[in-house]
Image (tube, rainbow, N blue to C red):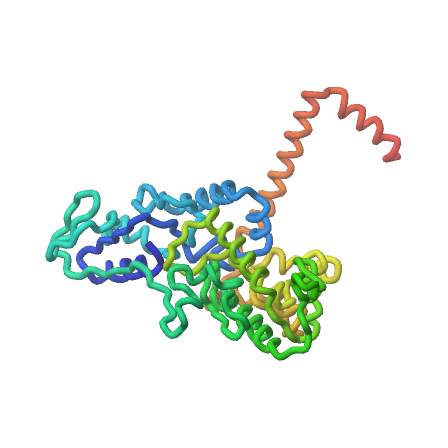
Length: 397
C-alpha cells in the first residue's frame, strides 16, 4: 500500500459509490504536516534527528516513530497496520485516508484472491459484488532493456551499483544512474549530488591524477587499503578530477550496504533501494568533498552551525565549501525558515495574544518547581537550608 494506491483510492472516493482498498501488508501512514504546521520532511530531516537515529538502537528508534504515528491514527483500528517496523520501509504519505475510511467512503480489505466477473473474492473469504473497475497499483518493474543484462541484472539492479550510481561491472566508469534510489525525503537534492559526483568521475577519466595501485604478485603495487584511497581522494578533489576505486573496493562497499539493508529494511526485488535522506546525501558529499563539518562550523561560525544542525537539511549545505562552493549558501541557510513561512502568510494576523500568557505560565511553572524542590530538600534534610543561609550571610555582607 504505497502512495499511488492510497492517492487513487482517496480521489476516487469522492466521485464513486464505494471504494475498496486492498492491501497485502498494510503500511505506516505519515502526514504531510508535522509539528507547528510545517512540512514533515522540513521538520524531521535535520542533522540532529539523523544523529539521534544513528546513536540510538534501531529498535528504540522504531518504537518512538511508531508511537508518534499511532498518536495520529490507530493503524490496527483502521485496518492498515503493517507487519514491518516503521523505519523498515518508507511510509505512505497521505493526509486524507483516515477521514475517508471513518466516513465509509473507503473500505480497507485484505489481498484479492480471485476475480469472478463483476465480483471480487478476498483472502478472508468476503465477496464484494458489482465492482465496475479494478485498478492494480502493485508497483513497477525496474528494467533497462537497452543495456546488456549482464551489466545491470534486473532482479538485483541496485545491488550491483556502487553508491546506487556506478555499475561495478564496468571497467571504466562511463555510465551512471541518476535517481535510482528512494530516499526518506526529496529525491531532487539526491539527484543533484549524484549528478555532481558523476560529472567529476566521468571528467576524471582523462585526468592525470593516478590512483594508488593495489598490491600485485609482481610487486608493482605501491599502496592498498582504505587509507591510501582516502589520501588519493583528497588529492583528486583538490585537482578537480576524480576516478573510482578498484572493482574489489566497489564490490566490498556494495556487499556491506546490502548486508545493512537486509538487517533493517523490508525490500522487494522490484523496488529501488531505500536510503536515509541525510546519511546517503552525506555519503555522496564525501565523494565530492562537500560534506559540511558541523564541529568545525561551531568553531568558525556558531550561528551557521546551529542552523545546519537544527534546521532542515537543504542542498545549500553542500555548497558551503569544496567544489561548486557558492558564496550565497550561508545566507540562504540562515534565511530558509523565513522563505518557508512566507507563502503561508497570505493573510497577516495580529500578534499572538497568548504570547504573554505563555510567558506567564512558564514563570509560574518555574516558581512552583523551585518551591517544590525547596520543600522537598527541607523535608529530607532539615539542616541543609539553614546551613546554606548561614554561609551566605557573611558573603552578602
